[in-house]
Length: 227
Image: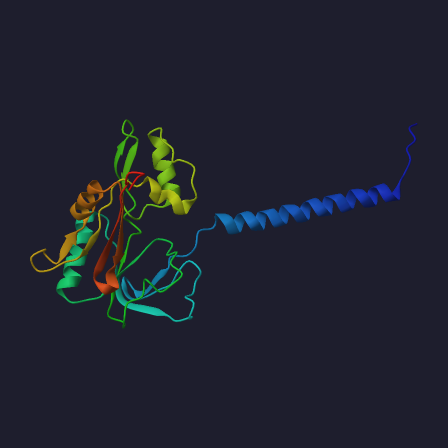
């Protein structure tokens, strides 16, 4: 016959341990559920792609106002984007861009009135070209950082370690489409201007101010130490 010592305090401690562990697992599950669940689409429409509202990833703008637009367009190629911008420009409509997660805290995605047009980059998320030898990727503007990392890995590349806001330090080329004149076909591409300006200066920046119809060109050239 085997004899053992019974210790009520040991059973109590053991039960407390398992309750604590179960509680931690529940908390961990809740945290992971919150982290892994993507935010809702910031654009919601009453019927199809018409009569829409737009918000940001926080679910509300600072002034708690509701931004309404007549409709939203979802281009899937650059050609479709140019066509949409040209048509809206010709019709005299105001346009704003919204992204998949709409991280803009301010109301940059809001148009004046309710007859505006939203252009979403949600489906402009493809890789245009991958060049492993040159160590470059050409992607569309709607690609998320997570997608970019995955696309780079598929061709044996990786992004240099940097905060997400510093990814622009590794951008070597960019194409921008904006409303144009009749001679431009109501849509124009800033690519040639940006590249030409960049090639003339060692360090250069473009600050685009759509609401003012201006582009600020900043030149930062190296000079001799005895200047």
